[in-house]
Image (cartoon, rainbow, N blue to C red; front, top):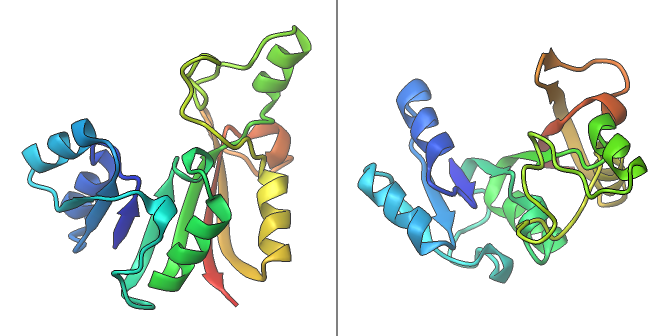
Length: 175
């Protein structure tokens, strides 16, 4: 498993401990990498916007982009590279059109929610996507959505996820 934009390695450590996976991460932040190394995690410093040329096609069973896709400069390229090196790709992102965010916008404010915890002036987010946008994107790019789940603080969302879910999770593979 490869975790792209693994941050401080929280998910990486959890998957290694709970699922006994062989995993490594890629992260840009030196501070985050230091936290990973201190935890004994295998993490490499790299800008995923430049690609994953050192990895062969299908070299990982899973590639994870959790809370990463909206923060990269070239999400289309990064996702193509993830699909190239991974047999399956797990993507998780905050739904920028979640009802709480919409209500804040109606009040004339940039939204701050649990899934979007940053103020406008310090957000790492460069791209603002909705669940519906991501589904359309996958359809246009012939990316197969194998499974999906939509989450809010009280659990999973089955009805109207684009409106009611804070987080979208997708399991993808190339067609």
